[in-house]
Figure 1 (cartoon, one colour):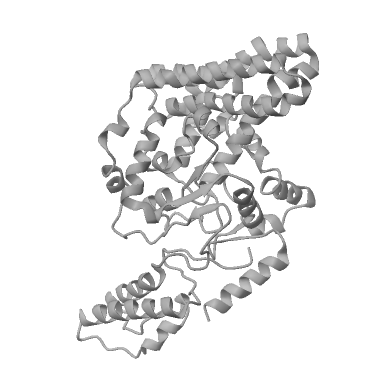
Figure 2 (cartoon, rainbow, N blue to C red; figure 1 turned 135 degrees about the horizontal axis):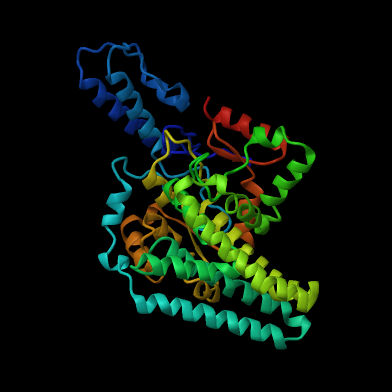
Length: 445
């Protein structure tokens, strides 16, 4: 990424737009004066020309014994930084970039309260309808695969891999207890729907709920963590090549690594969680022994690839894509625990992406992702109604995109390494990173 970008929790890169800069200075000056007037006895040796400096140099020379020193500094930084992103006016693939300057007092529970109560209601008929749609779609895909000539396979596999992903989305509702009000039903349906994917339900449920609790938080988010510059620079060539592949042209396979890493190791779970984790592992093991092994024996390696592996890889394509697209962009940061804010992360750090209608139908609107992160208790069939409400109340704070080559290119060519110190995405190329760092430093001088 050749240019710097802003975060709005205390660090800002000034826009070159002189008019916008003048507005920020005027706002900061008013807030500065308000803070100072609150204690007439304070003395200071400070010129308002400090507002021409970068945010890291903003400091009032007020005696340390005053609690208002920090208050005045915070007010100035917030006034300067609480502006729409000026570095990225547009990004290919995005139709709207979020204004991340949400009100400081806005909390996630307050956003949830603005949603219509009916979006949280579980409708058993609608829930089981998603199961019927998915099972029918998968059966139709396999029927098409059985009769189609080889040259139509790409179309059939594109459809079948997407239909199979619908199985995961149904289980996804089960994992959030938004499929049924009965916990046993959620566990049974979720386990069964994930078995053909060799995805153990309970391990996934535990780690996925951690992702929701710590979305785009460094270290803690279990959906994925960005590679850091020091990790890349200190890695051997083979590891560097793997990083470049996973954050580049082979992004679509990254979900396979995540699946292997997070879901089969009992040591990653607390003792009280392991009993149910073992049940899920036994379930997928039973599918392997009862279905996949006979498939391999009777159909051979070619039949195994045709009937199971390729549809399974199609599912992982969408898993990788959904995970990347919904939380990754040059202007969306990962943050440390101290500065992370739940309302900001879920509202402005999540992307609403529009996919072809047939993909959204087969995947049960999982792409309507912002309301799902505002509250995971919303069933998939109510996500669009919830999104309409969020758009009505918080539209300027939403990231919106359209799936396609432009969007994927924007992400994989710009979001390769994440600099946690400066809160910005960098490229693998070291010269490009040095240029970006130099430009960032110049913008604050």
